[in-house]
Length: 310
Ligand SMILES: Cc1ncc(C[n+]2csc(CCOP(=O)(O)OP(=O)(O)O)c2C)c(N)n1
Ligand code: SF4
Ligand SMILES: [Mg+2]
Image (cartoon, rainbow, N blue to C red; front, side, top):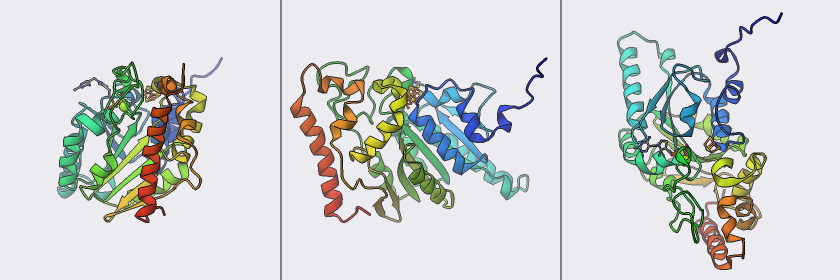
């Protein structure tokens, strides 16, 4: 007779724990970024999670992470992080916790929170110089509730709230610049399909103090409408077409960490995703495709002009 396994989730390496026993979609780019980040951050973190897809990782009282997990409303994860930071600092000051037991506080939110509902609380935390890490997995919509358009939705994407015509007629908000304008310790963009770049940035952030913020573009098979096995390919194309610039902000300076040497046409990225299918079928929308390409070209021309392509 088989003996029941005595191995528990918390005894597995963190990467294995995040692969098994969760109810996340296969090919989830947000989960990929979180796994890679956890490889660097290790087990010594307290996660503060605003409502969204990742909330399904922790079904009370269980979590695949060995650290604690606090679930907050969409708008208030950075406020929750402040409370945890303060409580731990007070316990250390009173001698009831050693410095080694003083854990990192990591906010984990989707773009709906980061770009919209939680932006005010984040701005306040940055003003106060809160010592925390913030990871926004950006699937460019309110994914958990069926992909309504958010402040991160790109121009031309069809979402649950932009179902006809061109799709979303607005522009994706430049959250990187909004965060950087607060002059925090560190801001970076990352993506799971570029793990070396991601790991280097998290290692750098881990050694710093103060606000350290990350936007991880999160290819989302379910809501972007593509085969899960294309998740890494779509992530790579986001970088190689120049749609998603990998960069970091530190000490008042922005550096592009992996500028595409020879940019591929943006439509190579768009045409793999059902949310952009209306730009190609039943007839090609040449004007919309030209406009989307021109925006990306404009971004990289500005980077070349300012000499910031390192
Ligand atoms: C104030 C408020 N409005 C609506 C909801 C319902 N809700 C739960 S998760 C979610 C989507 C969150 O989107 P995002 O932050 O991008 O995370 P994702 O679902 O894409 O992972 C919404 C709208 C909520 N929890 N709180
Ligand atoms: S809906 Fe998208 S972001 Fe949410 S778990 Fe599924 S793949 Fe990940
Ligand atoms: Mg989202």
